Image 1 (spheres, rainbow, N blue to C red):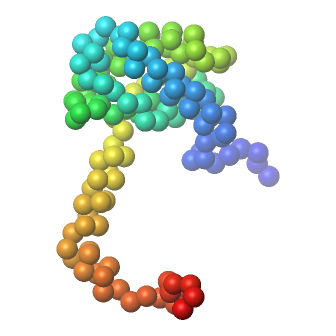
Image 2 (image 1 turned 120 degrees about the vertical axis):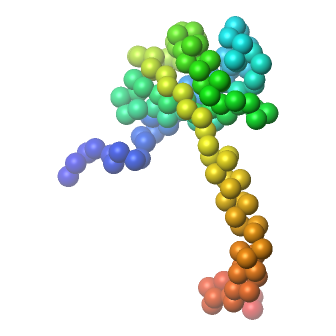
Image 3 (image 1 turned 90 degrees about the horizontal axis):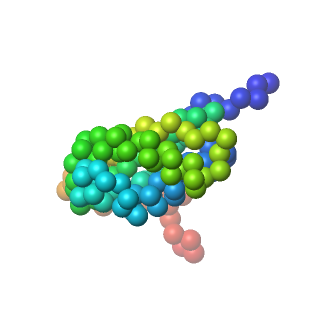
Length: 141
């Protein structure tokens, strides 16, 4: 029997470190100490941080608020990477400060697309006309 986890399931430690990093990065970005104009003009939300199994790399998923340009924000975050790592080192107790990479979080766009698809007339018609299965009947009937 192997003691290794599948590549898809993050360990509890990875999840915990990811949340600690997310909080630290959100605090630094909220404080507004970064002088980069790409970050000063557009508020940024850190939605998720995924730490690698060895905790030496972390992918930071961000969303620019107000429909800002994600590519400009990602470039600004890449330029601010050394300062962000320094701030993480001050706030999060880790043996190694992870190397940060940044990516745009598209989960909100995907959710909006799915919502749009579910509200299309042909889908609504199919859902309204679907008969209830025996498992779907309300209790007490």
